[in-house]
Amino acid sequence: MKRFSGPAGMWIYYKVLWLALTGCLLGAFVNALRGEKRIPWREGEAILFERRLAEAGLAVIGASVIRDRNRKTDRLLDVRSTSRYRAGRIPGAVSFPAENGIESLLAVAKDLLDARWIVVYCDGLQCDDALRVGCLLRDAGFKGIYIYAGGFDDWVKHGGKLERGEPAP
Image 1: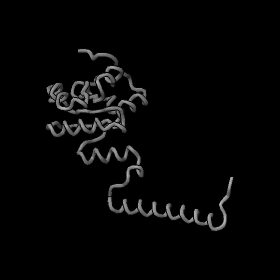
Image 2: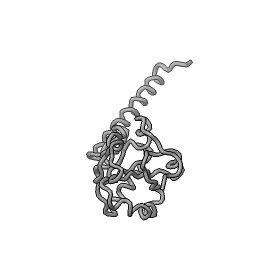
Image 3: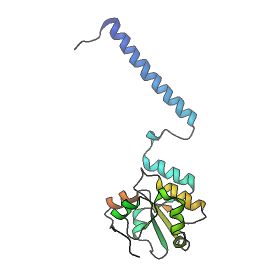
Image 4: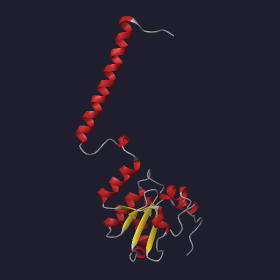
């Protein structure tokens, strides 16, 4: 293995140092331009997701609240694909595939009118579908919309029961 020493070694050392310093200055400049918004890798996914929900006027709800919900007055919407819904879902959840948007809303709107809470979930923090559907419901005039930020992944992680197959009529 050849070691760089003398003038060639110093040139490489200074070049690496210059690149590192330039990168730090560029990062600081970008942060300054963005103001309050930080570059996403600087914060955890949960903090970013909660901030986005707050900006959208929606609230976060946790697994314990879902477990203790009143099934007669609270609605749970699974916005994952129909195949994922059939493979496993939180008990009592209604399929509301996010990719169908307005069509899904029309299919369940009557059931949502008398709901005290509407809880929307998808796979977890990495999935934006719950946020998009929550905004769709908010814009359609529904109240009491909550997002289960941890979603299906969090439910399974905490040992929640699952329903599988077609829902009972």
